[in-house]
Image (cartoon, rainbow, N blue to C red; front, side, top):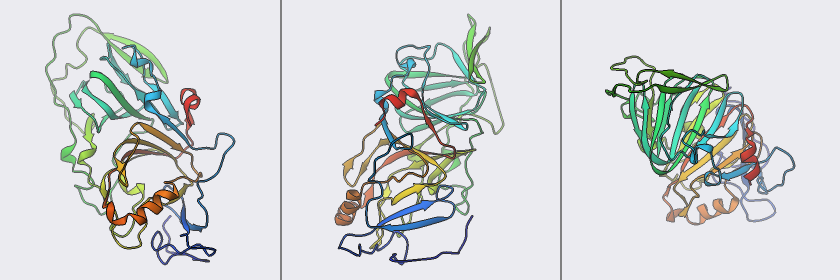
Length: 367
């Protein structure tokens, strides 16, 4: 709910996230801590604190966690018939990791929901009944519900970060930005039907239905489609083709960078861009409590303030918990303002309206 009603009490800056006042008892700047509803799209309050709100200890499930993808071993890493490893889940979505080294020896059909796979590492082809889709690092591969497909990987190292949604994945409405922002639909890679060899044996299709797997067998190639038309299809999209929406005088929140949405789920790109340059603007994301969304963030790569980020690190911040860059990063950003004209991060972020549970495999190794 958008409202123009706003109160300011006590010591605040004239504009949010700009020209922060100093702590009354010293020369340090106050910490701007944003409490928001509906991600960043609802009512909000900016609290000006004397201390870092992310400094606390927790007891119980309500805590932020971190895990490295390289520390997780899905069964498909060693066994071609293996499956991806579930990482997080709720009633709206599951988040998965696949590290497949060999092609699937079967085709797959998910009748439980849509799938969106982000390619953190690796190359290959997804064979679909609409035609093949080649993929590489930085690609999203979106496979809508009930489409028959098969992953054919190249090489030894593959990290596929998957979001499975019960509701249909779709692009949000970018009000006022026009047809070609933040991405031009022409850059989406849609498959072309490709002739396939006649079947010399039966083909297996592994079907996920109501959380269980069954197999059906066909005496022809599952990708024997010679033509298709319509607005329901698999596709690929690379993050290099994303046009970052920017402001020179205000750090824009993740809600401005949403790529795909489904009921209860937002998939977001945080990608390289120029830093805000207006004097006094806070360039590092503010301390934050997202009252209505759990947040998952995968570091794909890049740098922040000249320091490499840790590729493959996945963090989970429950709704209502304080999180954000440490205060030392904010101080460094102000001190070295002219040294860092850009932020070079590559982060894939997921917002979930319902609380996410950690799979026991993730729970056991999370920090």
